[in-house]
Amino acid sequence: MVQITSAVAVVTCVVVAAVSVVGQNQATLRRLRAPLTNMDFAQLRENMANPNTVSYYVNCVISKGACDRTGNALKSVVLDQRASLQLCGGCTPDERERVTYVLDTLLINYTDLACELQTSLKWNGLFGTSNPCL
Image (cartoon, rainbow, N blue to C red; front, side):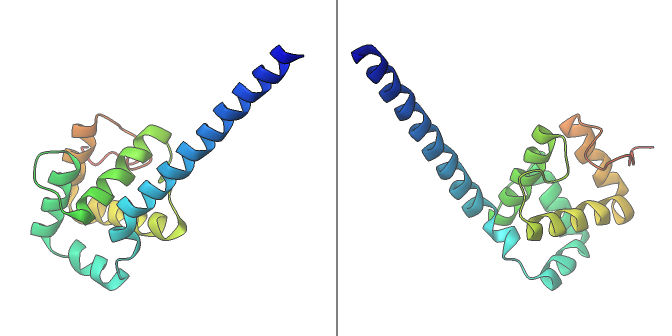
């Protein structure tokens, strides 16, 4: 009886610790992605219309250049997408809308940067079925 109670106590502690870590990870992720989530969509469109800004963020995501808070948010989302093998798997609806817009704009208006991003990440699924390098 004592062994069973001890085993139950250990399992309970492990479960509580795991739930705590997941909660902390989600809170950390929300803070990391806040600059992207809270960005006004008009500002995002303006950023994506500026080739220098787009190049800055692509270089950030592929670790070829400096990052600001927004760049780190984008990097987090793209790397999460690669890990989950789905578009913005752990994203909020606002994040998903913004990431979809960024990737679509890259694919349509900045094919060379889209190709560089996909090639650098070594992941052909970044843009769905479209391969920007062709």
